[in-house]
Image (cartoon, rainbow, N blue to C red; front, side, top):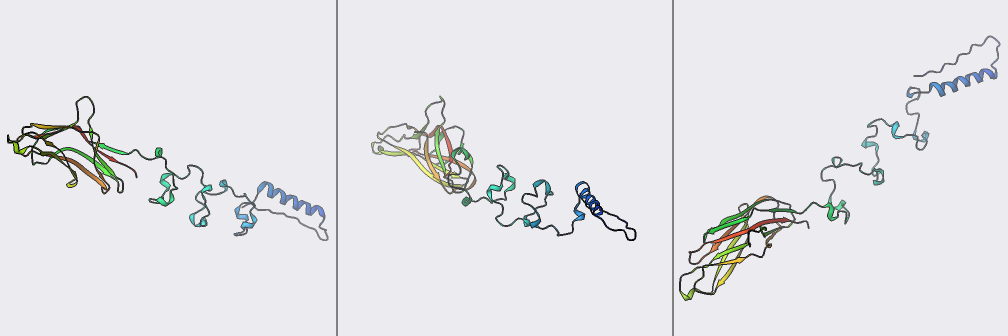
Length: 263
């Protein structure tokens, strides 16, 4: 701690003159300007807020971690106190930003993740047997609660030929069995749960017909689901309806597609 000592010895009857005072003042001024006071020269709690000029304490005067949360008044730090980019993702507590904290129209389409799309390999399955459910396509998806998942059958593309579903339709040679509906049944399953069933069919209008080949208008939506949440193995199964049990059906040059959309 810097210490100022001013010593003056007076003889008997010696008088204190103005030069003596000036010398003391000069010593004091030199001490303050050159030696300076440190924190040990200042009595505890002697400098109050009223003693500090506006702007006197800057960032450089603050020790690291000197200002704790308890020193900050509620609502004292407003948005204009944050420099751009000063709050990084790791500074946010989990679940801090809720839907109510996001202003309308804050996120534009360019800021939202791409729509999740999953598709199977090309379906080229023939020889499907009447009355038997056969898996023709498999995909794995992860669905988000509340977001619709659209399932479609899409053309495999390329030059391999037309996407088609072949429905067996050969019956015995009696005239009474014409005008009968022949169909290919489908069911969509999430793991072991059936989430959709549908069929594609056609009427035969003659006694003899070997098979009905339908060009499939791909892409075609086969199911929209809003209940899925989590990870699933999705399978598409097919089952032809052949009343005579003679011919088999097929599904060729198609793909099963799952499309999760933001709503």
